[in-house]
Length: 86
Image (tube, rainbow, N blue to C red; front, side):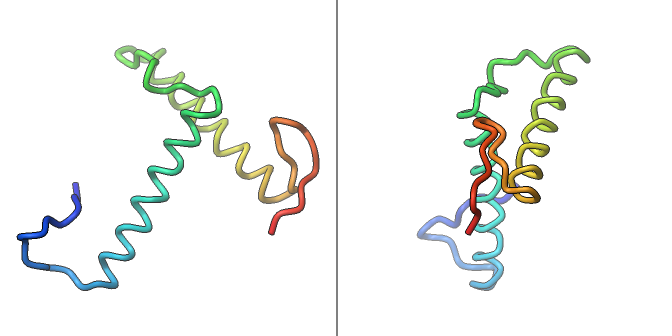
């Protein structure tokens, strides 16, 4: 697990590597934020059983499928309207 560097720590990685890590981190946090705000509330699921884990997997798969449809065919799944992507 990588954490942000503190002010009193010496840098052990290059600036380019830090930028790359921050980009990946922002992408991951963005996906979690989008999943939370589109009715796929994963935090409230109890994944202590196989059924609960299956629910989490299905919610992540539905999110991925929605992104694929939006990118490939420019269709917003929530409204079923064709959008122009920039």
